[in-house]
Image (cartoon, rainbow, N blue to C red; front, side):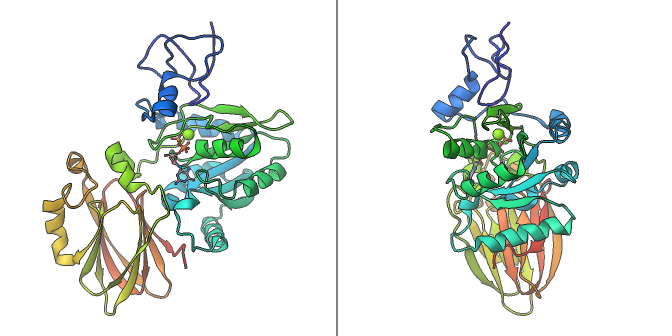
Amino acid sequence: MILRKCKGCGAVLQDLDEAKAGFIPVLKEDSSYCKRCYRMMHYNELPKIIASNKDYEHVIDDVVQRNGLIIFVVDIFAFKATFNKRMIEKLRNKDVILVANKYDVFPKSINISNVVNWLSRECEKISFKVDAIHIVSSKKGYYIDDLTNTIDIARRGRDVYFVGCANVGKSSLINALLKRNTSIKNDVISTSMIPGTTLNQIRISFFDDGKYLIDTPGLINEADILNQLLPISYNKILPSIEMKPITYQISNGNAIMLAGLAALEFECDEHISVIVYTSNNLYIHRCKSEKVVDLFNNQLGVLLTPPDYTEKDNIKYDTKIIELDGIKKKDIWFSGFGFVSVKGKTKVKITYPNKTEVFVTNAIIG
Ligand SMILES: Nc1nc2c(ncn2[C@@H]2O[C@H](COP(=O)(O)OP(=O)(O)OP(=O)(O)O)[C@@H](O)[C@H]2O)c(=O)[nH]1
Ligand SMILES: [Mg+2]
C-alpha cells in the first residue's frame, strides 16, 4: 500500500472516498497533491473539507514536546483574537518567536518599531516571554529576510514548527520563506481564506543540516466572526490591501456602525476623535445613536452588509458598555473584523455578535 501525504494540506492520499481528506482519483507512486488542493491551487476553489478543533490539543502537545523552535504566528489585523490565550498557555517557557503577519494591510505610514514595542508590551502584560518579535507580510514578502536570519540563529540545529490560529497565514509564511530562500517560485502549501485549510502536519526539507520547516493545522478560533458568516462575506471583512483608516469627530449621541456587525454609541461631554481600521470593503455608517436599533431591525443584510441577507438570522447580538478615561488613546478590537481607535473621555455602548469578543488595549498606532 502506498502511504503518501498531500504536499498541500498534509492529509494522507487515498483513492477510496472522495468525501474524505486526501482523495485523489488515481493514486500513484509519484502523486503529490490531493484533488482538493489541486483545485484550490489551479481553480481558486475554496476547500469544503476543513480541519476541526477536535484534534487540536494533540497537534499543539505534539509540537511543544518536540523541543523545536516554535514560530507562533498571529494576524496583526486580528491581533487580540489570534494572540490566543489557550495557545499561549501551551507555549509558555518554550523557545518561541512571535510573528505578526499581514503587515501589508496596515497603513504604510505606521512606524514599524512602535508596533513591535506595542506587541512586546502585550507579551509583558501576561508575562509571556518570547525570544524575538517579527512583523512580516507573507503576501508581499516584507521582512521575510529578517525573520530568516533570526530563525537561523535561534533554531540551533533544530526543526522549526509554525503554530497559531487558523487563517493567520502560517502556510503562506512557509511558502514565502521557500520562495525567498530557494529556487521555488510557486506556493508549495495550499492556502485559502477559509479557516482550517491545513489538515495535518506538513514537513518541508529546508535546512542544510536536514532539518525541516513544519506547518501545522490552525486552532479554529471560536470567537472569529468568520465562523458565523459564509464565504460570500469574507471578502468584505478580510482586508486584502492597505487599509484606509476613516477618522470621525464624534459628539455626544453619535454612533458608528461597522456594517451590520457592530455598533459603537458614544456618550461624551466633549468632541472626541475616532478612527476606524477595517477592510476598505466594509461599509461604515455614521448615525445618531437613537437610529441604531431601527437600523439593525430594518437594514440588516440590506444597507448594513455583511451579514448578507441569507446570513443575518444566524447572528445574535450582545451589548457591553466600556468607559474610557481619555488619558491614553485606546483601541477597541473586534474578533476578526478590525479595530476602532478612540482618543478622548467617553462611555461607549458596543453591540457585537454574541459569540465574538471585544477587547480594549492601548492604541497600537500613534
Ligand atoms: N493581506 C495578507 N493576507 C495574507 C497574508 N498571509 C496570508 N494571507 C491570507 O490569509 C489567508 C489564510 O492564509 P493561510 O496561509 O492559509 O493561513 P493558515 O494560518 O495556514 O490557515 P490554516 O491552514 O487554516 O490554519 C489566505 O487568504 C491568505 O492569502 C499576508 O501577509 N497579507
Ligand atoms: Mg495552513
